[in-house]
Length: 579
Image (cartoon, rainbow, N blue to C red; front, side, top):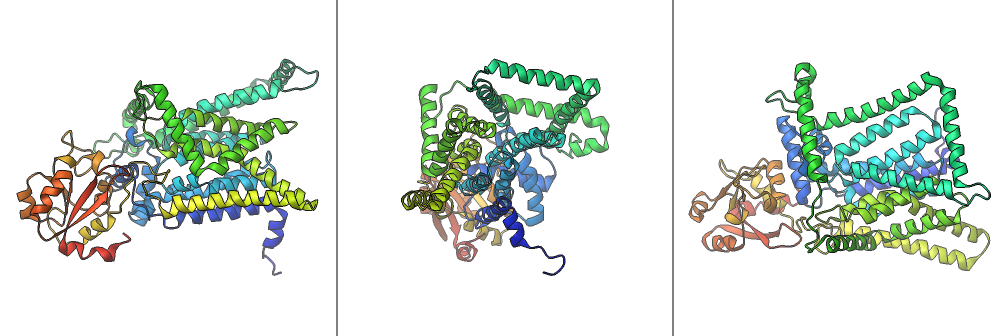
């Protein structure tokens, strides 16, 4: 071997868990990046991408709680400037993060067997729900992933007593909050999971030793350690605690502070003009207060179109469980099995496994209670922590198969092999269908109703090539007009709820859009594309000549929207099928 060369085979053999996790991560990235822009944007994707592009073009942004945390807008604004606009670029940050998430399995190596570490990476990489929402421009996977990695760093801090991990936990919680407000819920769930783990630790069967005896012994150790440290040592720990809180606060302020070069109330301006810093802090606090009052102010309205809260919760819980059954059955079954193996089959159950199990199970029960409009993405909040007990269950099956094979137990080995094969096939078939074959189909359990099921992108791409000095896209009729007169996204005359994600594609192609209610004006101006719906579309079709009518579903449920495409524009469409 030439000096300086690396014997990769020897290294892989020396650390098979690391090699396995790295291999799984590479495959996870590939699975998330292939045809990333193939699906037309969901309502939420289009709304957030619009504001990211707006920030990239104007340099002005502030926290809009209705689109959740601003983190993804900052990242996408940078990527749009670097790589150009498009659906693949829009989804790239979430896809890369989701692809790298299996690496977090390495944080738990001191508490999981090597087979369980690799199994954890496989579960995080291959679960169809996590795969689907890694290819979706939404912050749910980001907040779940940030908190999961923070959990891993907290475990490392406990194991090594190294304070750098504590600062990492603080920074990751700040990033999680900047991604989505339900980070607060994660913190609350952590408190409950910790209480259950402590209960298990103190009150498990320990011969003649009572749980209270153990608690007293732990308390004695803590007091003795405090005395040994002395005032200086205790002060050092307190200083690090304050430092961690400061890191969290700085991350939050950095992302939530407005950037507004027009009037100087912005973070970058304040750095050069410290006298404006109080105004920036006041604006940030006001925005956060308004947002958190909205998201956590509580509501007495039942969800799921039910008459009372109990029925609403039961409906959402049923849909949550249906998603687990359809798209995450192997992970769910393995998680329950892994928890039971750990809780009742181990002499000393591992706190890490129990904590993640409690965290995940509470999330299954709790998130349907806290949602107002159902989206299958809420299951991500439970599936990420449940990946740990699921890895325990999967690795148990693997080790069982190895043991029976070594013992020449052909029947048992065959049964385990068939079971593993069935689990693998179920994941592969489900992922293939839901994630790649029909990611926008109305009958896809992971598709939320605000997902367009038809792809109208070629029409707008063709309109962008049309030679026109005026309106490129005209919104016709009262059905698509802004109900309050003005929409926050261009065209301001359009109905935000009815037209999204059209606004994102208008901005992406820099198309001029306007609204009109007089059919005679439409006939006279003859814009490249006219968008109408319902009776307005029917009436307009009878009057317009030289246009091709194309119908598209803007939502998984509801009526179609008609695009009247001028014939010279329509002829250019086939060459632009992949915008």
